[in-house]
Image (cartoon, rainbow, N blue to C red; front, side, top):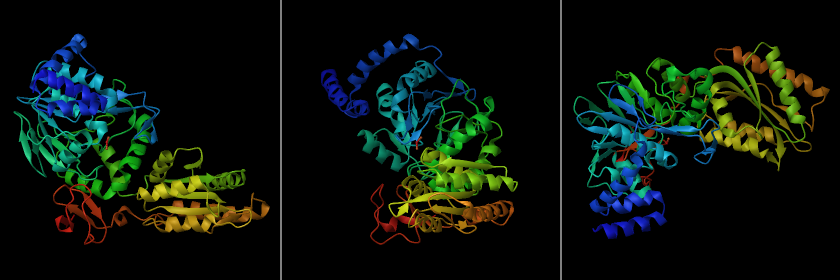
Length: 499
Ligand code: FEO
């Protein structure tokens, strides 16, 4: 292909967006194009100095970047502290890049990567996770370093082609569980981690440093501010809420799959956790592993009560406040009250994963549950929350129905129970409701202090899982239906085996 044609392809692809640019050029076989682009990128070297690079070890370097402009992660989750897209380079006899970044931060990323490689070839690009917040720069990496080989799962190669029309069949190594790649002093081992958080996910273990490049696992919302390591910040105070919110909302549904990876990790000497978001862990790994063990087994992190209310004219709010005060009066210190209409549902989901007890107080609306409360409960169900104790307060001016309907949803949550009697408010609480609210507060408080009230983790995640042998997709259910087709690779039920 001539440079002229390649340039035309570039312009054509540009009209379709940046992601298509490299796809149209690299995979049109455009070495002349690459040369042209190399001259363009040469100009970028005007600041090819230190970049915003951090050393993870003597030969593993952080080349990721943070986005502080973004409002909504995945166009859903508010992230006022921004987010980091982590990428790492290993400099050995061969050079290896672990994942790329979101398209919002490619400028900083390429500045970093160019500085770290310092004129060396990029030999391998390991794709642990294909979601575009980590893969948007793959096509451009392959343009800039035309000799780089992609190392990924078969499912990742499929999804890469789906997103970016990027056919890597002639420059890839497709790996599976336990496969290894020697790059000089270091040998990399690939560990499959389907559904943590997509089906194509794998993790990569480096035998020299003990680093596990763990994709979204152990990640967090929050931009990095120069500090890279969790031990360089007050993680529990400043990062844990966002790490919890990230896990519960992004990966929370896939607790059994996270448990699988944690059991694999238990037999490996992991000394560093290199996630694709948030700080890197090199100290006190047991602390964050314990959090993951609790979250992924749907075990409450704290003996605590969250009171969530949905109120229009203040009656239900008043009842919720009274109930919270009475629960606290009984000696339960960790009580938190939320207006379901105001608090973002991702915060509520995270709190539900933290707390052992959840009080739901909602008005009746259109003969059902107040819409924001219903959305919250359906989101809890979608995230597979289990093993909690609930209490119910309903309000209805003429035909209260929210209590029964909230109970129905709670009854579908595995290992969850309801304590006390439903309190029914008519429009606004009056003195006649006091005894019922106090009785419910007594029941909740007694349940919090009762060690046997909340089911243990072992009861969680009891459902069967079936793994597609071709692409790693996990089907959850008692049996794979006869007419089932794998949504990733199109395989039939015969391709699935029980995990
Ligand atoms: Fe950070 Fe699942 O991507």
